[in-house]
Image (cartoon, one colour):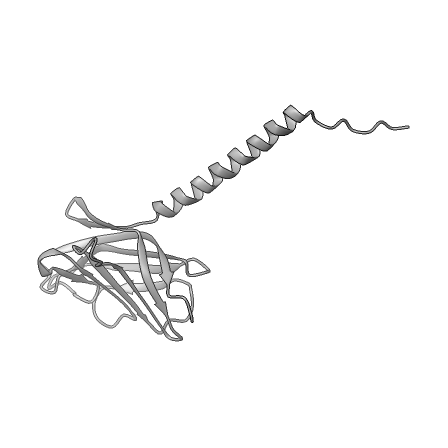
Length: 170
């Protein structure tokens, strides 16, 4: 007759349970830390001048908008993003100059404004991408080499991922 498997001792079961609990806590902390790691960074010259972590997002049938920053607690910078012809959570190209379905505008201190629609008076390449996670919870933004001011005298670069928060439907 085969013998029954031996059950672990009470001490061993407690160690296993404690180890499992520590693993769950570590994974939870890692998930929370990775959410905090999402950010869109704004670079001016050689310096990081602002970092956004979240966006207020609105999705309708053919339009998507997101606003990053601009609240009372961080009024220095705000980024507005709009996608006309929105058709779901996938990649959207961003081009330099008017005529793109994707509009980015960064508002900075002292009434500074930078946009992919502002084309400088000199030759400059410019391209980027807006991309989404399949659920739309994460929003990736990248544009380079620069978004210019209206007269082309100043520029910024931005890149990164933020977490979108959507208003709950009533």
